[in-house]
Amino acid sequence: MSTTHSAHEHHAQAADHHEKAAKHHREAASHHEAGDAETAGHHAHVAAGHAANASHHAGEASKLHAEHHNDVEEDA
Image (cartoon, rainbow, N blue to C red; front, side):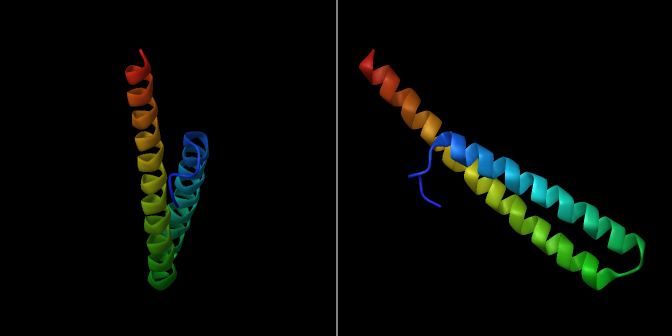
């Protein structure tokens, strides 16, 4: 993803990825409890990917906010 997305879009994407990560963490816990380590590992891996994507989108939103703040200060 590039910074051509708005900060709002990045925040929304970050939230979506956090929700998906949480879902996969719950699935991993459930499979682990049932003794299915292979499926638990798969869900844990997918959760980690979603967490990384959430972090990326949060970082992009943060950069856009900083750029906007700097533009506002320069106009003052």
